[in-house]
Length: 455
Image (tube, rainbow, N blue to C red):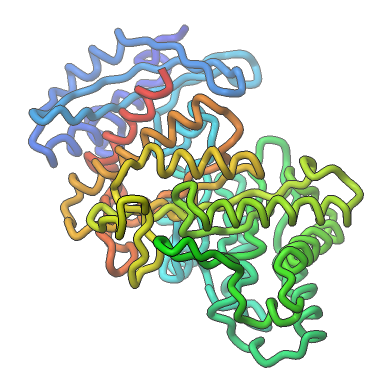
């Protein structure tokens, strides 16, 4: 094993503010911890650890950890893996890319319209995302229009051709926020549902070996449920429900098949070049709405399989669970883990292990899971408090992933890519500085958690 201080002296450069050690030292000053850079250099030469990823790949880690007076741990490190020639190569544990490799998942963040506009004109911000994340969830335009916006399509093209950063196209057919299609006839709706995916996939490119597929959401939030009454149903408003005469399974089946066929006509292979998801909210525990959604998606997969002449288990239909956690709201009753407020459905901080874990166990039986829009809703805007809530929930999720590999494809943390933007009502954990893009102390807390869990 080569000594990184010899082979990669740039990783130990104490004069470069963008080098790993100065970044860590500066971040620790933010939380009142003074660290001697020379001490880090010396300690990094001692603490060699071997890790094996879920794919069997071997990694070598050297880490340095400090702890504050309250017990919070902060870690930085370097990681080595063998290249195509069988030689060990060192690099910094940078952002969330290497952490995802250790756990066996794709780690990303959400971006909104402002971010997308910025990306088109700001290579520095684009490079920051590509260096620190594996994918971005492009919320884009929630309201499906008869014609996709040209800016959105240009963004899809740009990211589909990017070898370093994949894209989660986060919008799909939905019952709400329709724009320009509410008054279409049933025949016009069928035609629209065929043509819209064709417009999207004309900008999705085939992927080479090692490149991540583009993830495309084909339908968003088709179910409604009330936490206390146990009432669950399809959302029975909107043009799609009308066009399919109230047959929700057929509605989802045809939506899926339209995306699938549009991609096939383009020569794209499902699983390799793209993946299809259905996005769900309000199912953060194994409640009535979750079980209803599970059963309807299972029926949908069976009907898709019949249409394609394959087995249901061969249908690649992933589940995108929108995970929004409330640290303040309390359940309305002793038997309820859900609280519905004006922002939508949130899971209160009540028995999160059984709540979220039970939902993951349930939906992993019907499809691979994408944990999407992972965010904390709290009246406390202190970043140190917010990051502790993220860590609390994140730990259970990561242990689930480690214990049952292959069940979760990705985690998309809301707001991690920007320090000054999040949903207007939500605090931001401030993982990176918004101006310098340097990692902040909370980032190194998350690094420590990933390193601890993957031991």
